[in-house]
Structures are given as structure tokens and as C-alpha cells.
Length: 89
Image 1 (cartoon, rainbow, N blue to C red):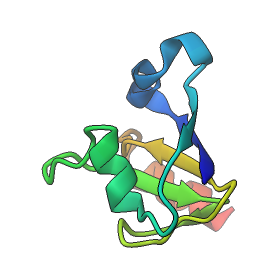
Image 2 (cartoon, rainbow, N blue to C red):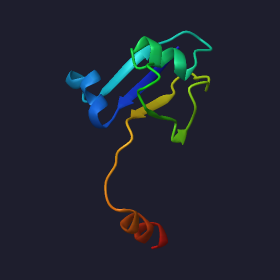
Image 3 (cartoon, helix red, strand yellow):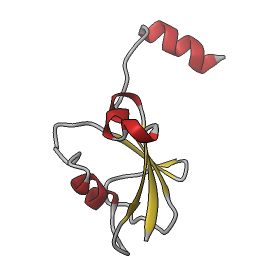
Image 4 (cartoon, helix red, strand yellow):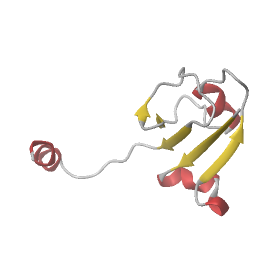
């Protein structure tokens, strides 16, 4: 089956010539963990936020045909007071 992987932030270097997007064929029943292993992003010390079709998922999530997978690394910035301000608006 085919899925589309969108790399964000520092991960865009995984597919720079394609604007950070790869279309990949994977096995039926493949999990996000299998995809991360294939992309060599499965190291335990590497933190990656995973979204599938607009929802945050775990590495055990089973992928479906045509899924859009968004991969990004956590970002930091701003002070806690600023974050609180934005949440309460």
C-alpha cells in the first residue's frame, strides 16, 4: 500500500529534493514503528511527534492505504508565561 510522509522542521532534510515529502510503498498492516525503522528514525533517544491524517498517534498505530503521515521533532521556545497567555486567549 502507499502512504505519504511529510517531514517537518529539521526532518525536512530526509527529502530535500521533494520539499520534505516522500510517497512510499509499505506492507499491509505496517505500523508507524515499522515506517520509522525503514526511515532510520527509530532510535529511542530521538523524540518525534507523529501525526496520521491530522491526529497524533503512537508508534503502534497501524497505517492505512493513502495515509498522510506527518513527522516532526518537538520545538521549544517562549517562556511559560507566554504559553499560558496564548492558551487563555
